[in-house]
Length: 87
Image (cartoon, rainbow, N blue to C red; front, side, top):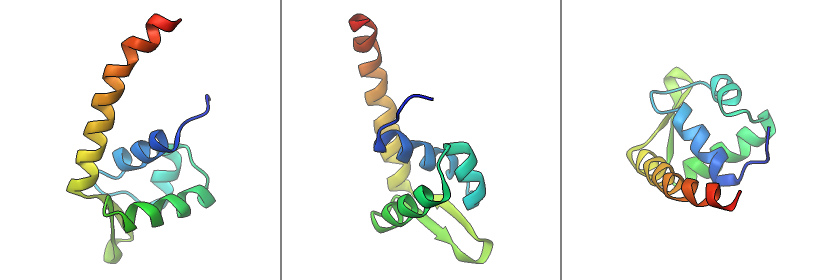
């Protein structure tokens, strides 16, 4: 797997947690270690992009988080054709 940026990892976590996901599911779907997951979860919760659902032991992407992922996917779509020209 190629090296990913922090933004790529954040988007992968937020995409996985859209409907509500456990830590284990997020770890496997976003390809992050438990140590990385703990770090990212605390950052994303503090920034209001992810919310914990305590009673179900899940994490869910907030509306702000969904807006962030849409913008990142849109920007990636714009940059993608530019990278193809470079190769």
